[in-house]
Image (cartoon, rainbow, N blue to C red; front, side):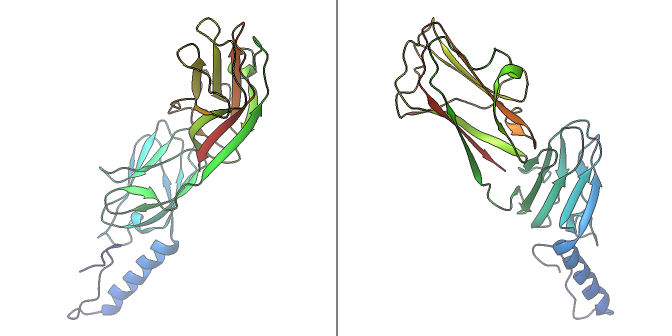
Length: 260
């Protein structure tokens, strides 16, 4: 028989050399609390050995991932062990690692990211709830036909540089006055880029059918690009606003929400 969560063998009443089983149990408990495993992840998914194998890889608490990744990979933990893992994504290549069980859901990490996760025997989830981070940036009152940026991501205005890996969850604006002159022929287009990437994180066009938010009203800029919304340490958010000849948006607050 074994424990319910870590699958550590019990000492049996009839067994000889009980100290062997007891010492193995202590070693496995020690690994689950403070052990470190360095694991290379490069050209394929990695599946950890787990209980009932003695001193299995999955019993370690801290997992340091290294190597030159060639694509996004899965780091697969066993369902038999219900436990916490501290995962450190130190591999290179710029690809995401997903910590998961064979068939359950998991948690993604980008380069340089560190997360405490928990396997409940089915799925892998965050061990600590993500904390929302809110960036507020004041955008000035632009005159009609006045823009921010030159139509390229490289020329857009830098409004934020992330101090650590983060994943954006929502970008919105809070209108501070009444808009004017915005219609199908004179649109107001707001784009947010990650660095100088060709694909914006979000791209919103205001026209006759999609009204710019009224005064003191928040407007969601829409669905975030799944790739561009994942920020590495040092990534920049860049703002571009392009207005038609009569398009006259008011001053607004740019609001960005993210989680670690």
